Image 1 (cartoon, helix red, strand yellow):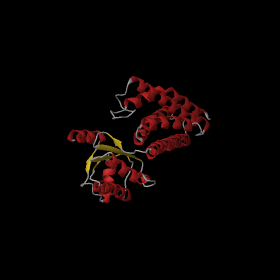
Image 2 (cartoon, rainbow, N blue to C red; image 1 turned 90 degrees about the horizontal axis):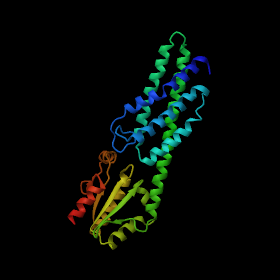
Image 3 (cartoon, rainbow, N blue to C red; image 1 turned 120 degrees about the vertical axis):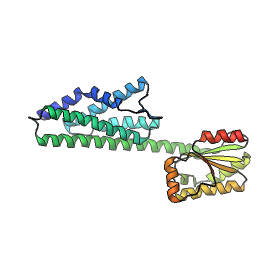
Image 4 (tube, one colour; image 1 turned 60 degrees about the horizontal axis):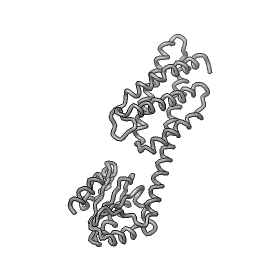
Length: 278
């Protein structure tokens, strides 16, 4: 590592705490987010320590030009974020915010040494550090996806192995939580078990909760409507909950008709109304 790169390396490490504080100050109020500005002091300090670790890891790339040490931070933090249920887009947005803060310090260093820094040094630093950020985001996204997929798979296995997929919440109302893709439930005798159990429980209404369904398409919706039609033949009303904005948007774009089915945004609201009515 040449003299000026060593000086940039040291300069950035001297401003680790300052950059972390600026990033923490940039946070906004975010519902159900570890990044929210109104987080507890314990969470804030936890984020500060993670940011210090992140910055030192990125800066170290200037020293040896290797991205090998990036994987450790990415895997550790991505795993924690996925377990907390923090949406991936929030983390990506904060990567973007911190990159801007980080490069402001690089620019400050360049301004301080304009007479001695060569253009090729600036180009090399910019290329190296941007590649480090990009690689970190790539690794973070990969590990987050692996953990999220494992969680969804485990939940689906639990539900698919249940002999009673329908959860009875009253004498006449039951809930069927779906997780993953709707077509994952085509195999085995899943639909048949739903019908049999709904009839055995003498339900008058079954709530199908889609909160755990990430996306929906025409084929999946047709399968869902078939279940609704079969329940209707049994004299059982169907209510659908957990249709998130992205699913609603897709449904509209595909021309899918949910108008004949009672829907709620949240499961708790549907349950509250149904138990009150019955």
